[in-house]
Structure formats: C-alpha cells, structure tokens
Amino acid sequence: MHRKQHLRTALCTFSAVVCASFCTAFALPGVKAYIPDSSGEYVYYRDYSFERESYAGFLYYDDGTYGARYFAPMDREKQLPDKSVEILFSIDPKADSVKMTGERILSTLTPDDDDIVNYLHDMMYELVSRRQKAGDISPASEKPGTENLPFAEQGITVEQQYEQFGGSVMLLFDYKVPIFNLKRITGRDGKVLLQAVTAGSIKSVSDSSFSQFTGIPQKLTDSDRIFKQDASVKRAVYTFPSEQEKGQKMQSITIDTGWTHPMENLWLLGNNAVLSINMLTISGSEKEYIDRLERKLLLSAENSYAVWNELSIQRTGTSLSVSVAYYQNKEANVTRDFKTFTKLSGQNYGYITLTVFDSIYRKDKAYFDAVLTSYTIK
Image 1 (cartoon, helix red, strand yellow):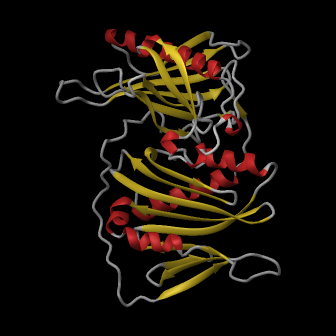
Image 2 (cartoon, rainbow, N blue to C red):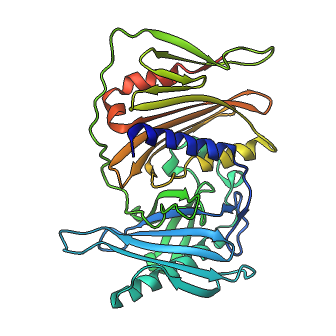
Image 3 (cartoon, rainbow, N blue to C red):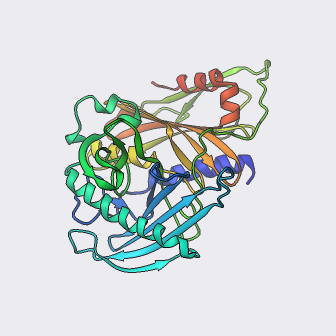
C-alpha cells in the first residue's frame, strides 16, 4: 500500500470509530460487563508458560459464538516452524458458565496439535471463570488515582488460585480490555505469566487481522524514511472551523507551510504524516461515553496492530489523550498515532489526530511534539 494511502486509511478507520454508535454489544456468560463486547472484538495474549514464543487470541462474534487461535512464530534456534491453530466454537448463551455446543477447526491440524486445541478450550473455560470470580470491573471499583498510573498498571488486581499457572497468582483486570477484561497474570514472585499485547476489532468478512496476527516484535523497526525540514518554510496558524460563530470555541494549530492543506481540517506532510482537526458531539452520559471512546481508541485497525507496551493514556476531567504505536506485520511499517479530545462546551468536544511514520517521528521528535503542543482551544 502506498504510504500516503496507508496514513489516510488509518485516519478514515478512526473517523468511522468515532462516528459509530456503541451498540450491538454483549458479554461473557455469567458476567455483567461495564462495557459489553461488540461483535468482532478480539484480544491477544503472550503466554510465557510455553518454552517458545506463544500467543493465544480470542475473538467475540456474538453471545453464542467465539473464535480462539494459538500462534507461535518460527524459532530458528530450536528449528521449529511457525504454528497456527484456529478454532471456532459455539456455546450455550443462556448458561451461567461456558458450555460448548459445537466446534469447527479453521486451520489444518497435525497429530501434535491436539494439545493446542485442548489448551485453547481450557483457556476459554478458565479465563471466563476467573472473570466471573473477579466481580465488578469498572471505574467505580478501581482505587482512586488508578487512572493516573501508566496504562500497564491501570485496573484492579485480584489474587486467585490458578493451577495451570502454578497456583496463587495476581490477575490485573481492566474494563478497557475486550472479552475477559484481563490485562495480565503474574506469579507471587512478580514474574509475568500472561500478558495482553494487543486488541482489536474486525470490521468485515474480508478483515483478516485476527487470523493473520503473527506476534509483536520485541523491538519495533520501521522502514527507514527520509524527511528534511525546509528552512525556508514559514509558520502559520490555522483554525477550525475557519469562521467563528457566536459563542463557538475555535481549535487552532500552528504548523509550517511545508504541510499541504487539501481540506479545511486536514494537512499532509508529504508521504510522512497526516494531521486533522475535527469536532464530536457526544450523546447520553458524558463519562460513560468517554469511557467507551477510550476503550475504542486502544484497538487495532485492519492488519495494523496497536502495540500495548507502547501505549500511553492521559485523562483529565476535560480531556483525553491517547498515543500508541501501530505495527503492520505485512508491510514492515510502524506508525505513531496521537489523539487528543478536549471539551469545548456542553456535549461538544474538539479533537486532533496526528499519524506519522515511526522512523520519521524518532528522527524529528521535537518537531512533531511541537505541532501537538501548539494545539489550543480559544
């Protein structure tokens, strides 16, 4: 995909998320979720109990249908090929616990894969049970100040017995994580045993993001790109909307004339970055809407995976900022994405979005940070 087209696709995907209503949502058996799952949402975990790098993913279709997938990348040192096992199973949606009623294997199995299929079954049973025992997982049940912690530490910690992971463990739950609300499992010694690495939402039958996930590299490496600032460009202040109505607050951004301006609220820096400003009118409970929006902003786009160990969230009473790296495993691309929502008045919010290739951002971090900090509400 062309670089500029890729950045525009990311922007369109985000706009669709913001404009979509939060409906057609459900939850696990026997669980009353603060933010119920929406069809197509998935989560992937790195399972450190395996001797090789291994991931377990779970996908929600509806209350009676789930997908599960195990993936292990090629291990050259152990001379092991990559391994992918994917199943689709149905459960009784009226039961208070997981009662499987059918199963379909979506991948080609070898005789050695029976253990993996059983592992995926066990994980589904056990993680649902752990979530049921955890009880209420919502902002109301979090300790005061939790929202100010780094994303990796936000949530509610519960101690439970989990024999498959060695006995007594600490489970970190967070309502922002789809399906099980489970972010991490650690042993009593602090060693990480299971870790959520990404989550997403497939948007159509042609979206293969869940089935094509191949892990998150320990070190993200973007394709090398060239960007040189032009010393002759001048700085300019842009406002949105361009004409102010009575009583209306304006959003403004200060950038240089090296950015092209094809639309009133859109700027392009060649093939390297895209910047936009827009407005959003929320409905219903303001806090609940922003909680749901926050969760949506953590999800991957089509074949572009949000890297959760590169995720940062800052939230105040009037603003929400999310920054995250996205990894495209098919194209060897890494992008940095920054979004900030700021209350204007009433139910109206203004927001800015900047998406830039990671190699460009790292080379000129101060330049792009200055663009973001120039954003103001007047």
